[in-house]
Image (cartoon, rainbow, N blue to C red; front, side):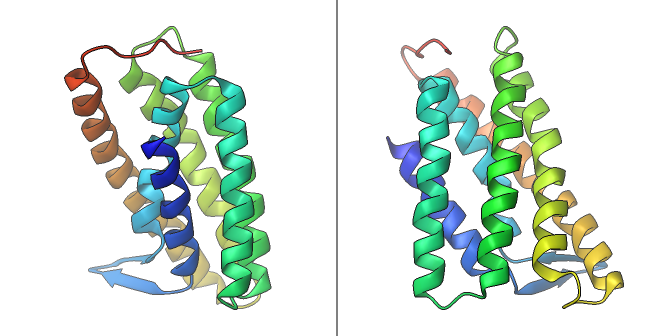
Length: 175
């Protein structure tokens, strides 16, 4: 249950900070990316603990909670809609890739599913939320920067997840 709560809160934090751009050296990325790098791995941990039905219910609950919270915070409708669409499609992709690799070790499942879902989420969200609002150069820069930051954070989160799982006395089987 802890991973489900952290997952929903991380998505909320990512959405509420999605339009703030950070520049580190030559890399530009959205502040929300710092949270999103962990989201896919949290979803993989949820999938490891529960079956796909719970994973899908968690994704839908996260979208619902985040739409309501973002609207209450007066977040731009373009960000709310872009986030819901990008989250839904990237998380479904992540879930199906992870599930297809269920016979492989956890780290392979998590890194492989993240490798596809992270750039999908980045491209969908950035284009849907900011095309026509930001310059094409900024959009391209943020897509590259967000993808790089997500990969670095996701790799660290998978490492942490592996440590958590190896420290568990008995790990539940995947569904």
